[in-house]
Image (cartoon, rainbow, N blue to C red; front, side):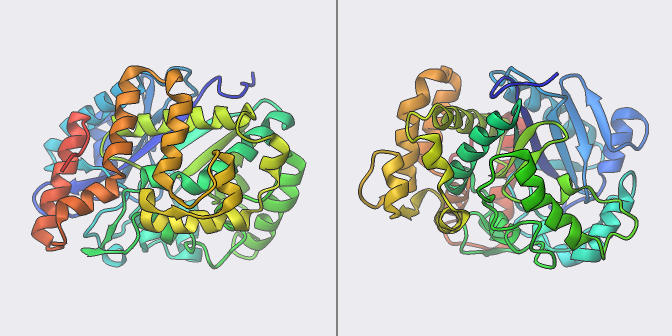
Length: 406
């Protein structure tokens, strides 16, 4: 059975395990899974939420167990699972850390790949790209999966997603620090994401996907070049083009969904779900053609959108947007901070959002991205002690499902 636009959703949240005594990443997701299930596995169904692991041994992912039509209470379900995982980890003197990057991790030295199921795939990835970099082993994101029924719905959804992607990090940036230093980017995760797979540039493209609005065109323009480029490396044919495609939003024709991947994970599921719901309502608005016609949405070239995106990952909500045609979509005519675009969008969609999530979005619009709040809390003091103190507060926010408010 296929789903139509916005009928159901899939949400994935990633967290790293840290040693509670020294704050270092702790590659024991397999031990967490043994505690939970009595065996090493890469996926555990826990009612409506599934636990899984991918690539590195210190990152656990919680995701909706299949598509759900109930986003309203999802943050509470995630919060329950986080509490349960933290309880199991406590006896191993370990806990979950939120945000999109560990601020002190040295990936060169500390990365350990997942050694169990799919390990052949990860080993091959490692051979091609060397996964001991921030872009591979020090990144946590939220993925939103949105269904489409047929080519016509795919075209509408892909057009809307492409248009919104460049400004999403203004809401979600949460990775300002690598290796104890301010990176100069509020969204350093997306900064490294751009060049992560430079060995095979066909995989990431310009992050913003190309102007493609049908399945056949997608295979021809994106999947076939990827398959061709990977062939010399993947002599055993074990890699799937759906996974190799690393654009900021990817089409999953194996399950008729578009997966949005430019969203840094937040300090708690309450924040993640508020962002997810806000993004989804804005996409509905774009698909409705209230702001801009579908034909005009399709005219945007990825290079123009990438320029906006590239600025936004640096300054997040404070980025000045000066592209006149982009501003026009939102009824604006002069250069403005991107947070004002989000305020305009919020005024248009908030009636469709419950009071609980409206309050959360209002908090984000008033207090800025998690990156901005982290930097505010650090007050220019990037000593290891101060960084640890701040990030342990983030881990507490995760445990309690509450906002970080320095």
